Image 1 (cartoon, helix red, strand yellow):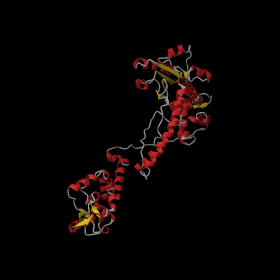
Image 2: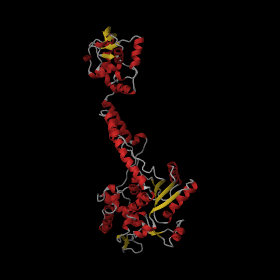
Image 3: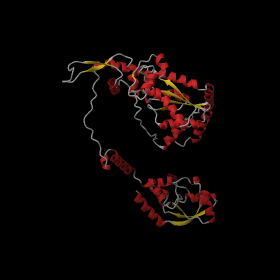
Image 4: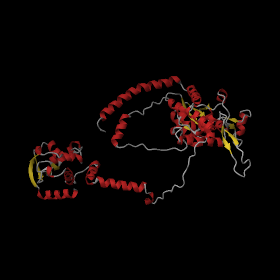
Length: 484
């Protein structure tokens, strides 16, 4: 098609004649806008009109029935100058002589000399591209890179063997029942859970998790030893394995659990630019959130010892817009530095840090180490630490069961025992029911907030939402039709 059109164009060039035509008799080719923008939208059209006034206008190229092939911008400039006549090269054929595709190609061939935008250049290139050939090339390259990595010098891994998930035996029925009771009971509102979040509530039940049968030749061979559920690695692993099997066979929904130690980053994308504009229009200004703490006299932050409770804690702190971090044990120096920077940038009088950590040698030491770090390394003098959980008051009030004994290998073991009059029992955050933990956290937060100032900010945000709604409607109305 392209070769045939070029042959016709060459024949036309040899045969055209030059005549004087009335400007008002010339007609723009409708196909021109498939490649080039409307001349009236050209920001330089006035400059071209002034140039034509001072200098002569190059002849336009038209068909025998007066459709413009080359010179659409000049035609508009001539009309702006009220010029009556213009010289034209007239091709020997009417516009209908060419097929649509041939005529589009003809327009491009006669407009090589014009300055073009990037979009116009792209549309010119599209004329020569065969869709079938382009798609075949795309599929070929995609298959080469995805399905045949060895072609790119990458060796694929051969998957050997087959993994078999065994059925759950009947002697684990009680263990399964209790797991489901925890997952679908008190912990249901706090999905996704962690294995630890199920393991610790199971310690409140006295049940048999399985039996140990020594191998042939080992002491006790032929005798079953009863294994009761306890706070040990074997019990934890047994719960983890059962949860995996229950998820695989559909008895527990997949979304009920999440492994926060293995993050995933997905990149947001759209099917095309029009879809993106429609999505953004519907969500315009939806991300506004007023700083509800800006009028508070103190800068408040919450620090969690564990990732397993982090997403639960956010249910409370997000409501108050309190910065929340997870230290995963003792924080490294960087989180404390960043916290000090946020406090300094806030310009507030005092820093208040609310801590959620286990009641064990390390968990009890976190507020002390954090306070020293902020005071001695980052010169934060006005700093207050508050333990929101697990506290001694919570242990007594909720009659929490001890999870284990403090480890003698801990560098803080002696300090912890002395502080607790020789009591070595430790209590983990997961021992608290989530509702209790969050209620106690909210009580602490409300105790350090100026409630009147906080409510005033909420009322202001409510008034601002009306203004945002008006802006959103006006903007969408102005953009209507762009993405259609």
